[in-house]
Image (cartoon, rainbow, N blue to C red):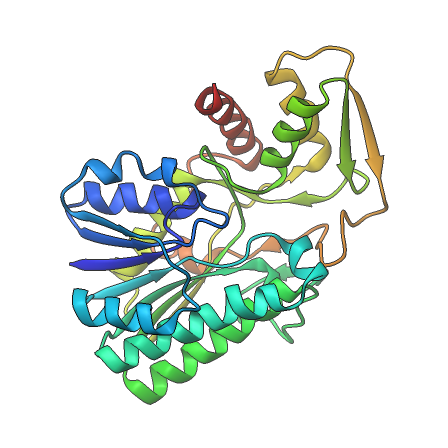
Length: 314
């Protein structure tokens, strides 16, 4: 098939592209490189079945021309603003880069009769709920602009599927880790420790605790869901049953860098920033019924990610 991957120069997108190319697919990537890195595509660029376009999904005319030219079979839509703090400081960032990017993709799909979309959603759509989160939990009350834009995107995908005979796979990602990181707590700690190797500032109290999934396990889940789940709208949580504290990540990062006498300084209360959900737990019963299980626990995923990312940067 010929596939469009949006946000393909990012962390998850670049790994997904490598995986799809290895499966024999033809892949076209669009990325504005605001958060992505073209170096992440260095293996893909060597492949004759890969094309890269550098423009913003807000440019509807360019996007429509690309759809018309390439005649895609399916879209994997991963492009979004992944900096939740930036979305708090400038409210239009998520409106444009997370929601309107989705609306433009859907509009181009409608105009060009592309019927299939996989959408990278997030645990952020649930909000700060003290319960194990299943796909049918409600009400959905996101507490970040990012979460609100992802939830709005899900709603528009639902209406386009019903109104225009489309099919969607809406996958709610947890915290995903691995190498080629562009954002997230491990990336943040590695940057801070390279800039100031005597002290590590941690936002929050270090007790924030979330499930972390390794990139290879996520890719296996994506491929399995798209292949095996055939409803008109397929919604899945993807995650691990275990979880990891920010304190563990900080201490493990310092240990793997072989740094000594590092002072860890915690700033703030339970939340690292406005819009942060300090703890959440996914119910993954639905995806497990498809036969998927992660190969790594949350702590093991974090440890391997730190090791691989240090190796990648060196």
